[in-house]
Length: 166
Image 1 (spheres, one colour):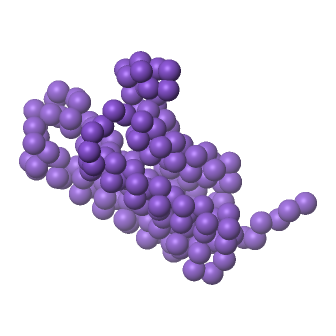
Image 2: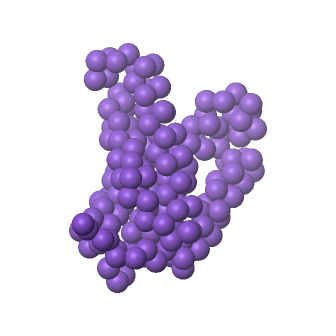
């Protein structure tokens, strides 16, 4: 039992949170490409991504694992994104710092999705049982290349106007 849920149900909840974080992160990223602030979607993405990392620490894992490392680094990156967005209001360099942090947080979610897909989906597992074969490496490289290109475009295009409070 984890937080009152069976391990299977907690795993399902964690996966749903992770997939929602990825989907909302893509919405936010494409919003940035159109220079749209999207405050509701952005907050939702950040919360879901934080929950993805936090819930990952509740699994009964013994010792330090790559998953715990990714979760830890992701939380630090998310803290930077939160400071840039809500503390510094995207002023000056904080605009691109936020974009880079948000894209890296999204990348970590996608990275874990790909790793988990190759571990849990039999058809993918047979293509790269040790996660060192070309299908696994290529999927990681393509996902990273896409996010790097979209991140660079977001840095160039995301120039939201000032927040107007009323």
